[in-house]
Image 1 (cartoon, one colour):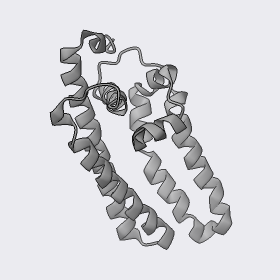
Image 2: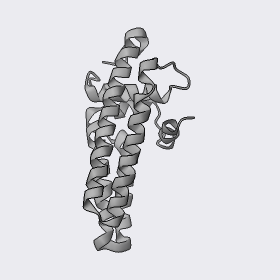
Image 3: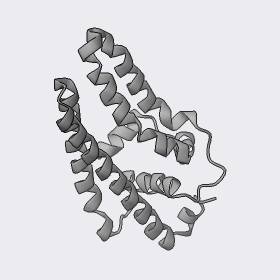
Length: 168
């Protein structure tokens, strides 16, 4: 099982949760998660152990986000298609992914992870510029990953009519 699939399993992403996560509000508000988490971690400078409360709140938001929005009326949006591609990517052990889509998501995942680690280290050390650089790297890589997922979905839906039915 891939690392991403293990994370999806941790998040208990069933059909209903994926349907809700296809809501553009879910996708775009999820992008706010990392800045919120970093601000919560940074707050240890003022709150000491009390910072665990906002960190727990940010962690709760990470888990709740794909569940709090209703399934969208229409899934004909970039954000919805990004979630469709992400589902396909997570199923890559059991579903053939076109060769041209196999490497870039891995590279972007590594870049996003490195950015996250840099941002996290910066927030813990109260080092603003490393935190900001890590945040920017993480978010740019994640958005590029999402764009690649739209492309993956479009390519695979072009070859499999059952995937085209995901768009309503």
